[in-house]
Length: 172
Image (cartoon, rainbow, N blue to C red; front, top):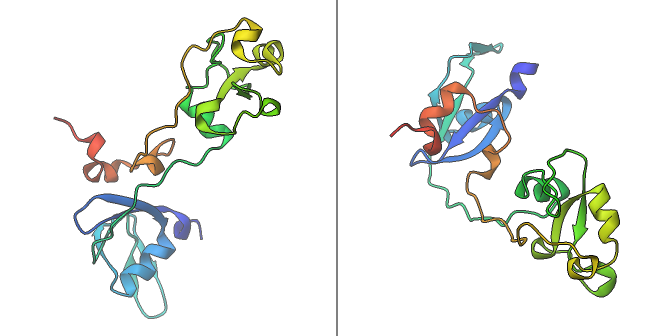
C-alpha cells in the first residue's frame, strides 16, 4: 500500500505547479475526469476491472486561481526565516528558542515582526528585557516572510521527473 501514498505533482491547466497529493487522490481525480495524466512511469495499479498507470504528474482539466496565502507563524517557520541562527550572537544551531524582542509581559505582540530565534544563553541573558536594556543588538530586524507560491516545495524532496514543471529548476 506504500504505492498509494507516493507523492504526485498536481499542475494547473497552464502547467503551473499547484500542489502535491498522493497516488490515491490522483487516481480519483483522473477517474472522475478532473485531471489528465501527464507523466507516469512508476508501474501500474491493478484492480479487478482495470490496470491504471501510477501517475507522477497530473494536470487539472480546469484552471484554478490560487490565492497567495500568508505563511503561518510557527516555531519552525521562524527558525527557517532566521536560517537556524541566533539573531543576537549569530551562532547557527538546531537547539534554538523563540524570543520576543519586546517581551510579551510588556505588551509585545506574538507577530513575525516581534519574534526572533535565539540560542539558549542569549535568551537567558536577555530575559524579560528589551535588547537595548540587555545591552544586546539584533543582527537583523525581524520581518514577516514574503508569500511564496511555491512554499510547499520548500524543505521537500523534489522528484527528478517533476523538474521540467518547476520554474526554479529550469536552466537558462
